Image 1 (spheres, rainbow, N blue to C red):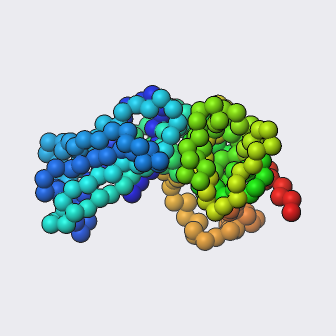
Image 2 (image 1 turned 180 degrees about the vertical axis):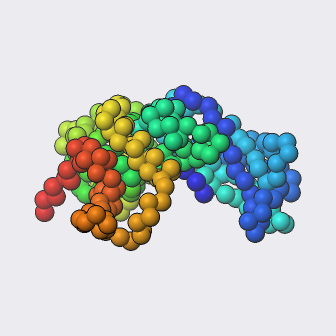
Amino acid sequence: MSLVRVLVTTEVTLTHTFYVDEQPTDLTGSCTVTLKRLDGTTVASGSGTKPPGTTGVYTFAVPEQATVDMLTLDWAGTLAGAAVSVRDYVEVVGGFLFGLAEARAKHTSLANTTAYPSTLLAAKRIEVEQECERICRRAFVPRFARLALSGNDTDRLPLPANLAMGGGSEIRAVRAVTVNGTVWSAPEVTALGFTDFGVIKRPGGAIWPAGTGNIVVEWEHGWDYPPADLSEAAILRLRSRIAYTLSGIPDRAISFDIAEGGTFRLSTPGKQRTGIPDVDGVYEKYTRQQRAVFA
């Protein structure tokens, strides 16, 4: 299982490799591929293509999507006599914190495409983006979320701010609502109001009926584009994760002495910091304060 982030209106070809005991292994027969939205709607389906000269490798062209979304991509077939199905996730986003070419241009240590192929940089970029979003508690590009929430018999429905839990409180638009199994019409969804801190309000005194997970909401959240200094900091963080060199200082050290005299204290990572001062200083500037909760 893996997560891939792709840009809206962009067609991409994704790859999956099947293994048996760590060895790439071809399926017996065809590879069936199904692309769906989180609500179960099929977006595309077909057969995986096996590139010539490969073993266990299959590709599938994911068609371009007009809006941000989260899709599931299921690869299925018969492997070593058993029916198998593996799921990947395709997140369609409105942008990235930085471009891969931009990262290579700013840090020549990443310019070697043999040592650092685009697939590796793209995977590490997702790690950097997820870490940045967790620390800053916000998305810096348009993104999609879909969650089952619990009604509370009031006109207000708070959305989770924690992106790690699939939330995102800086709402751009509410896309769809289902209440107790009933899908709302477009005019009903359009009539909803929402606040900057992620509370969706029903008009005219109507309430969200109480229940457990009885309301499913789809919404878009995030900024139009990331600030320039944040992009720079994220690229620096990418380099630290992918092209670091051993310094000779023990991994567990928090300080060290030099022969000429003097002690240096090392910056260490934590829940809300990467351990890189130039990165953490920028991230702190854009960190969203947690929403106050009143009993």
